[in-house]
Structures are given as structure tokens and as C-alpha cells.
Image 1: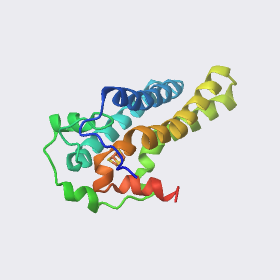
Image 2 (image 1 turned 90 degrees about the vertical axis):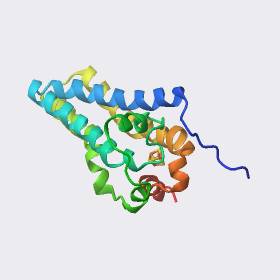
Image 3 (image 1 turned 30 degrees about the vertical axis):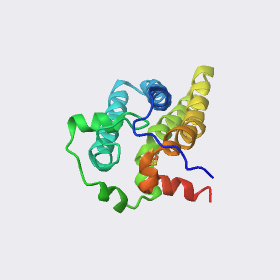
Length: 171
Ligand code: SF4
């Protein structure tokens, strides 16, 4: 069997689709949270910003793609703001489900908020957005990881604790 192809720099098409899924999740989440009040919207957006900064500061600096275009382009963005870390540290960090709970909360919080809003006052648009958010966060993210990002990732070949955690489920 031939070796799986990996990218030194991911093509634009993959970066666009991968980011579109994340951006769609953020926008739908923000729209739902907006119905709770502007303060909650600001807190939600700050939470997302905090997660993105944490990812680039703690993980991307140690990743093979630091300074390059990974599937999300974040290796490049990270190199503009943070110093290169230690690639060996990327492999050392064992990741458990609790470590990625903060990332899941980006979708879980608006879904729960949307359900509460629906109970208080039914609205077809809200129901549709909740369904879309659930699909993007599950099927959409799984498609991006499995078919676009991890599949062609050099860091996966070197070793990636996150990818190993996700794949454990499939074994
Ligand atoms: S294997 Fe997947 S999770 Fe790990 S660095 Fe590559 S794209 Fe990211």
C-alpha cells in the first residue's frame, strides 16, 4: 500500500473549508447567545477568543506546522504572535476528554441556551439553528478532522495526542 500523502503547507481550499465550519459554528453560537443579552454575547465571544489564543500559544508553537500553513492556517498566525516552542513538548502532553471540554463548550453552551429559549418561546428559526449547530459540531467537525485536516497532517505522522484520542473511539 502507498504511503498516505501529507502536506508541507495545506492548500487554500482545505484551509477555507476547515475554517468555514469553525466560523459557522461561532456565528450560529453567537446569534443564539445574543438572544440572552448583549453581555452574554460579549462573554461568549471573549471565551472563543481566549480558546483560540490558548491554542496558538500552547499547542501551535510546538507543532510541526509552526510558521507554516496547517489545515486551519493557525501555524502561520501563531508564528506572527508567539515564539517557536519545543516540538518534543507536542508529543509529551497526553490529552484526555476533559482537556478538550472547553472546546466542546463553544457548541454545547449555545445549544443548551437555544433549547431553554425554545421552551420559553417556540421559534422555528431557533430550532433550525440549533439543529445546524449540532450537525456542524458533530458531522462537520468530524469531516474536517477525518477527511481534510488530520488525514494529510505531518504532525499526525510524527505523533499527535489529540488525533490519537479521537481515533481511540474508532478502534
Ligand atoms: S493530527 Fe489533526 S489534531 Fe493533530 S495537529 Fe494534525 S490536524 Fe491538528
